[in-house]
Amino acid sequence: MKFKVWAPEKRAMTLVLVPGGGLRERRLPMTRDDHGYWEAEADDVGGGARYFFAPDDGTEVVPDPASNYQPEGVYGPSEVVDHGAFSWNDGDWRGLPFEELIFYEVHIGAFTAAGTFAAVIDRLDDFVELGVNALELMPVAQWSGDRNWGYDGVFLYAVQNTYGGPQGLKRLVDACHRRGIAVFLDVVYNHIGREGNCLERYGPYFTDKYQTPWGKAMNFDGAWSDGVRDFVTDNVLYWAEQYHLDGLRLDAVHEIYDRNAVTIWDRLYEAVKNWERRAGRRLWLVAESDGNDPRVVRPPGTGGRGFDGLWLDDFHHALYVFLDPKGWRYYRDFGTIDQLAKAFSEGFVHSGEFVKFRHRVHGASSAGISGDHFVVFNQNHDLPGNRPGGERLSVLTDVASLRLAAAALLLSPYVPMLFMGEEYGEETPFYFFSDYREPETTARLIEGRKQQFAVFEFEGEARDPQDAAVFEQSKLRWERRQERRHAMLLDWHRRLIRLRREHPLLRDLSKVRLRADVVGGHGLMIYRYSADRLLHLVCVFNFSADTSLPVDIGYAGVQQGEWRLVLTSDEQTPDQGDKALRLPPRSVAVYELRASFADDGP
Image (tube, rainbow, N blue to C red; front, side):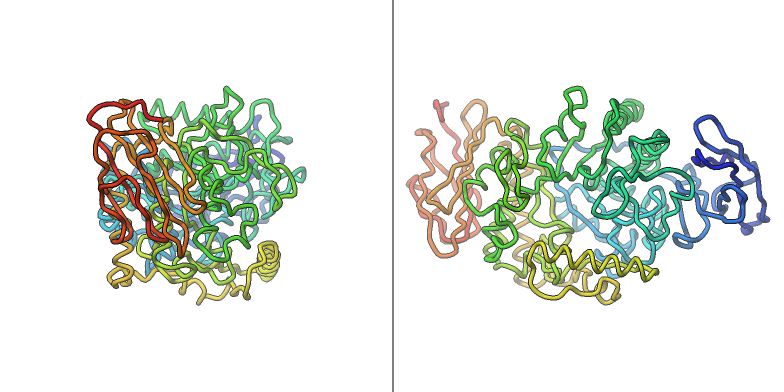
């Protein structure tokens, strides 16, 4: 077996095989090539063997920076994983079209009491029944301790040992594919966690030219940066090749800096396209970006970064202020119904306007970019997790508002994402939690959290993320799905997802034949029609808590045919008849018209 490690500035490198499994301890000298890669051969070593590398004089042993498994944690030896030994059963799987995905974000540790990949498999039939067809896993790259959000992983190729390691993740992906569920994974390339991070012992993985809010930035454009770019590009393909993942969500790409003529994004785009041609299936890449920059989802040949999708924060912010009575305090640059209409019709709300939160002009227009390039949500891990009390939307507002929020999400012209437990109104908090072992790391974490809460003027004291009880209290309580209030919300989500998947106008994310109009100052009407103008759909939202909304659903100019009520969140919603109606407070209604002949329309 060949061992390989990148360490361009080291004078020597030794492979140290750890005794166990019939192997005795051995130290094998490694040879260096012109690009800074050290190699050694060990013919009698296979899967399960454990090892370290020893840089320079060999006095200190260090885990492999590209370790595939750390069974004893971040400071223990790396373990060889024989990826070819796993027996896959998803040979016919070719993935799903991105526009058909309904995401469900999962933290493996908090999703079940057991907190393992295996325990998620036991709940997959619930996803099928709900209609969800894409799991998005929060990061599983090995971190320090037993519990963490995962965004401070230090071994990007190693699957977290407490979750079930490489075998556990493969079994989960295999089980998902057999049920028609795609699997996406959050990955972090803007920084590496501090505790247990061994990369700097090998080479110039980081740079002082740039700083991220979480630590040193990765070195993508400085001296010896070719090896760092290979490290990240190979990691993307590794997840697709060895774990059969359908896509990755890249964390905070706005904190990845590269001023090369050919950037990391150009290289990554080319590498992924080459892999797709070989594999015969797509590997979807989704970005989280703070810039409201449409170039993120444009091809590199046009100056873009080549991502398939982008998290659309503005949709959440524009909607949230109408759901939480205190929402305006946290999103002071949002609050008008016109902004929500713009979020539905264009995407970015801030597209060149002055934003008070940033004290500058922000964003560019995303008008004309189809809806299948945006992922929208009412909640994700950050939204409750970055509040001192970890409150979910379900405890910040009432059931009517939760129904309204779900409808806005699932009837939108974008790719929707639910956060675990959202479908039944889970009320347990989702805190930020960690299990660091070094006092300095813990102190930095707590101080950073205090500063973050001060910016948003959150009320209340934050819980100690190191307290194990904080993690335990963040776990879902699945038994609540059977309780009346929660069962009603669960059924509402099922109905919305079914309608979205079955109705041809809701499946069309092009937004070419979509109009978003403000009604009465607190209502929104989303109107869609087919290319032949024979099928029409109107989704009417009343965001007022106490005022009914007068609506004329015939405004579109369609005179022939009868409007039919397809779905409503309130029993008092008028069924059919007159085109003019009054929609009850905090409710949504969907009406359909199948015209007898095509009309000119809007």
